Image 1 (cartoon, protein in one colour):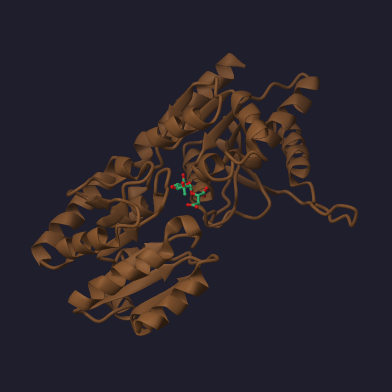
Image 2 (cartoon, helix red, strand yellow):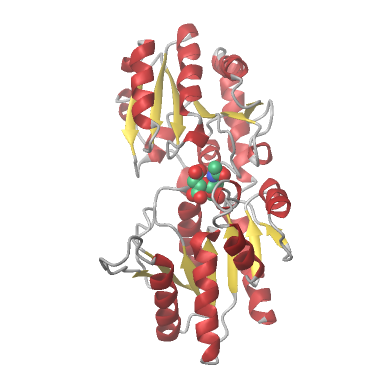
Length: 375
Ligand code: GMT
């Protein structure tokens, strides 16, 4: 199939999923066209089957807001004509599902019929999409998609609760390429992060309010009072600076490393002993799955779709949002005894294997085939 993938090219989970999906589909022989405003961060190789088309938005002084959706719709139309794209898969409803609908209507006028598959990722529904400013347009574009998928059962239920969705929502969970998550780094790389006797605790996110960054710091503070440990903070966003200040206030700044955005999370995860995800809401928690694929147990909240990924007492532990004491206690339960840590690491890896890319990507292919049949 010739598939156009529209996504955000940034470090966010939706862009990562879209990129990994496109690369896997290309490996399977499909022709993939990424259409977005920058080269996706995880798109490391442009091969025979992988193409990237950049959306440019010309600046015009009359506009306070430059119309990205319009430029995106036009780019989709142009690329669909030029490369005979047969199907569009848009990741994150806002504004991609809307722009794809417009492109589809324009192409229809020319007798070209392209189905649109929309994947909902979380904040496009729970935080942004449900805002009254966007809600009618988001509802419309979800209902006008030829197929709709959500990354967890919880997100499906939330979408049905928040929007008047008439379309069936297929749950296709996020996935992991286990072959690419094999630790192959030397121990000397570990010494750059911590001493031999110190446990390595990791958090990766976009440092937004929803990620509860102060809770990450407080949980780590409690851990390091009991056992020698270091905290690796990977990613960037508005909560980073306050977090650095909090570490200073607690006197733990020498035990916490802020990496900023990184393309080398595998180097950090493969030496990590524990992953912290105390989010207020999380449709899936891709970062936790990536950690588990490296055999890193997860201490998380029980919000949203996280319980579908992290299993209580097996791959880690789950607590109520903001229950720092419980999350700290659970973290120590895993870390204190080497034999427990070893078992949790093994379990985390087993749990991650449920989301093997080779099991999940065929689910998308089946949805594409059906959408092409129905159009
Ligand atoms: O986590 C974020 O804030 C980024 C966001 C995104 O849209 O890129 O992540 C969402 O999609 C990911 C991939 O499907 C999920 O793993 C994240 O749980 C989800 N984030 C939230 O629901 C807060």
